[in-house]
Image 1 (cartoon, rainbow, N blue to C red):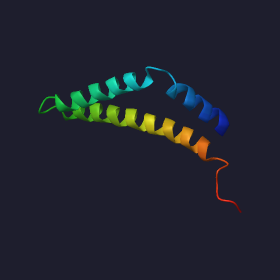
Image 2: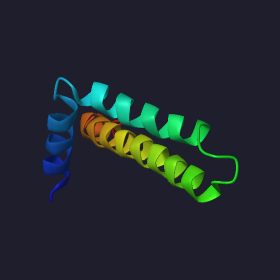
Image 3: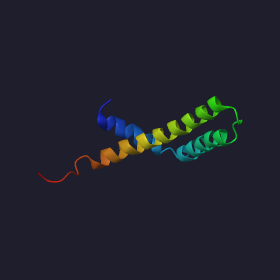
Image 4: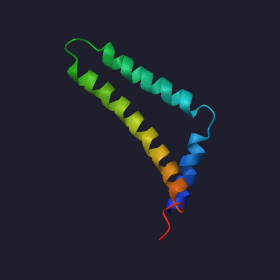
Length: 78
């Protein structure tokens, strides 16, 4: 994919009306899984933490792609 296509795809995903609500719910469920994991369930806690990190990284990547597209062409003059 070209950078413009990536930025357009990221913008399309972020423009979905319920995207933030769904992602918030998924992240909250993963965090709750970490909090309520059994005292000896280290693997389960680690899996929930990895899920929360993946959700945050996905959001950050989408925002980065859209911000990068906005910044292109707005550099300092030569």
